[in-house]
Amino acid sequence: MAVRAPADTSLSGWYGILPPPKAPEVLRGRQKADWLIVGAGFAGLAAARRLTQLVPNERIVVVDAQRVAWSAAGRNTGFMIDLPHELGGENYGGNQDHDRKRIRMNRAAIEFSAAAADEFGLQSFFLRAGKFHGAATDHGLAVLREFENHLTGLGEPFERLDGPQLKKITGTDFFIGGTFTPGTVMAQPAGFIRGLAEGLSNRVRLFENSPVTSVQTGKLHTVRTVGGEITAPRLILTVNGHLESFGFFRKRLLHVFTYASMTRPLSKSEQATLGGEPNWGLIPADPMGSTIRRIGDRIVVRNTFTYNPDMSTNEKQINRIGAAHDRSFRARFPMLGKMEMEFRWGGHLCLSLNSAPAFGEVEERVFVAGCCNGLGTVQGTLFGMLSADLAAGSNEPMVADALNEPAPVRLYPEPLMSIGAPLKLWAMQRRAGREL
Ligand SMILES: Cc1cc2nc3c(=O)[nH]c(=O)nc-3n(C[C@H](O)[C@H](O)[C@H](O)COP(=O)(O)OP(=O)(O)OC[C@H]3O[C@@H](n4cnc5c(N)ncnc54)[C@H](O)[C@@H]3O)c2cc1C
Picture 1 (cartoon, helix red, strand yellow):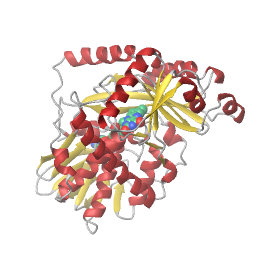
Picture 2 (cartoon, protein in one colour; picture 1 turned 180 degrees about the vertical axis):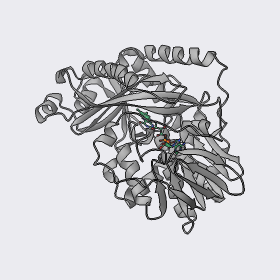
Picture 3 (spheres, helix red, strand yellow; picture 1 turned 135 degrees about the horizontal axis):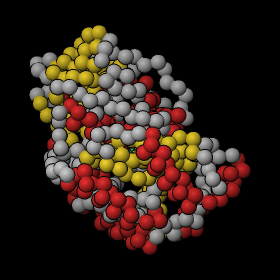
């Protein structure tokens, strides 16, 4: 089976503000492993860490096509959300029973990450700060009320805020109302993922810049990269949407990209003009609006979803969408004038039409954890960790819950997808109005 390699383009701000990484170890020649994981994002590193707990004396190898944190793992906005976060819906909520189960599982994944943050000294990349939802329109306020009703039904706490209260936090009077929920962790995603890989490095062998080009499954699976080969009896694929490149879940995964820009550092006087608090994260009342994060002296804007079935974006698309980020930034922070964005980037989300994950044993001793439906920091961690439990045959009860999730359903036939998906995204984003 020939595999298409990922090619994430442009430097994400989260990666760009970290010190340069150490030189990578690239796979050369032949290696053997007891456990081989392909993909070193949230899912792959969670699987690796869980294996170090379950089978501490066995040889665990992780291979990634790119540098750790270069993929979506280091490109996201860092909201590790415990609550329902249904992007395809109108108010993030889903079915109550399912949401209860997912909240319990999301929290287990967040605590699993929190233990790693403690063990590896990554607390500064992992803040238990909660998240704000901000409404800028009456439609947004109505959506928030529905969201709050859903939280009340689930017995989950939240705090309602008015415009002036949100201005105290964000410095802008753009928002007319909001909702705060306390359980979200705000991560510096690239810092956290790189730190996790470094923390695991004395128990897990990691090869970077080593794209897998073919996989032959059998009693011993053989995985080939451009310069080397690894054989292992157990294989865990944590490559998110690239599962399709490995021949699994074909025509079931939706390759959607989203984009972000990060400002240059704001001067002290710009920060004083802005006011507000130095660290906060706000997601739009309408799931299709703009997410905004302030991290000390910088601000990040994320918006726009595009359908890219070839699993890649390019500088032209990133810069075109960058203009939309600038408009959203100016609408919220007119007091900061024409602000330069130091970084602009895009990244791959893997969604399914029924918001289901790709999880389980797809061939004998070949396990998968992917398709995280836009909440991969938490669900990648969750399904990655549970893929290790499943593969090692542990008695973790959440494995059964994960196996009971439906599988991603088939996409609509062509040309319905290539015409319909962009149109649907366009209509949903239009609905967000001023919140975009
Ligand atoms: C701009 C943006 C904002 C986002 N915001 C959030 C957010 O706030 N909260 C949230 O939860 N999620 C967010 N996401 C989504 C989140 O980033 C992803 O869901 C998450 O990274 C998925 O984790 P993963 O480990 O499954 O996959 P990935 O992080 O994509 O990791 C998969 C890895 O597999 C490797 N790989 C693929 N093919 C091969 C191959 N052939 N050989 C070797 N290696 C291979 C890739 O290089 C990659 O490192 C956002 C995404 C973007 C782009």
